[in-house]
Length: 290
Length: 322
Image (tube, rainbow over all chains, first blue to last red; front, side, top):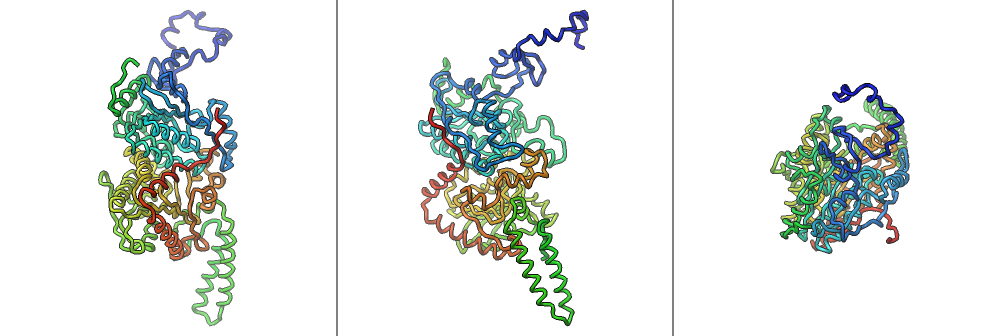
């Protein structure tokens, strides 16, 4: 019992159950890290970062792009590329059912949204993963949209930024999804050939086939605070080494210490940081007013 | 060496045992039982043919992991001459799970790189069961860069359960090491010929499998995740591995149909381990053919074709433009 509850007379302490239910659903949310009860619109305005403890909740692909890109002059790349069930894959459920459900839940056609636009007037192509679409897993569509994004960047001499949030390759597409690792990474060589920057932003979680392909080889690699980033999942490692992993293992700060990422950046500063770094990499002045 | 039989080869194993016994008896007996031995041998062969004609994907993956299956160094000794093993990534260590070096293939100087598993318990541990750490992939990359510098073709041999999922590997950047290889191999200015000889386990396999030609032995597998791993995630039980193997489409024949593999090399009856020499001979032909074809291309053409291949992977549909 907290000191406040102790202070209050018993009558006030007992809130009738009915009164509580009258509060509209979704108005309040609870921080997963510090348990603080927060006003949902505050959290949203704060880019899904807890205003109390700075815990970074996951954020959808479109909200992410909204937070990064200038409002004008955006258009989407590869939205018409959609998944097919080549293997007729079925576990406890069919792949097609899982796709349909993910589509209903997120409104997305697959787990990557790519947009051309600008950050503080610096033109770029920006890709963002939708983690809620089958764990942000990379299959043929993610690979193809990524490549089309790269191609658009190459054609217009623009830099590329990719914000990852993915469990890895999509098992339901078998080796086709494995090959997306080679495909996306190969496409990046086209940017490199033309000295166009690629900034990789790693968010919670970036694992498996996504981290082991394009995500870790950005010219600059930025991680969000406390994101889980690695090749093998913690459970798999625990089974292999038969010991409990330390809490900080495979977290952004740990990767920074080990030299795997350049910096850990708070989501609320991400837009400024990306603009500033891109401007320097491309040796341009930054429009501070934008 | 005595052949080790897999679970689904039980009947073949029993027959072979009887043949073995008869042979033993024949040696110190006056009675001629050679016709009986011949009869049984024939029967065993027919049985093997029947069993192998309808292997399930799960059974294929067991053949791919057969304890007697030829490993990279076995193929190196059968297919190459003058092998000079080169060691180390020049930054941290030498990873025995990946071997590589200079060699000659039909007289042509080249670089050979492959995953290496161990045969007995001691060697298995030393080679970490063929599961490389970042230093292994970085050694492989160093050797590929060496090949590029001296314009030597690269042959890689893929045979790993996967990249090592351990704490030290994570700390030293397992993901970066694999990603870096994929990136560099896409534009390596020399031919790269890849052969999957056993297990092609996920990203750990792919990290040395990006090239101009992808060859698979008949009973080799290539998979985005091990059947056991897939089963424990999607079916929540590793016991459903057989179903997962079926669903994942990991066999050479299936991957050929999907257009992901260029050439499947047939194995001797009962698998490569039954006759490694014959397997190597069949593989030699395919590799020589591939090398000849690739050497006829200019470097520019080679890289263009490779990029088209890599960027072309994937199956999707395109909805009408909105």
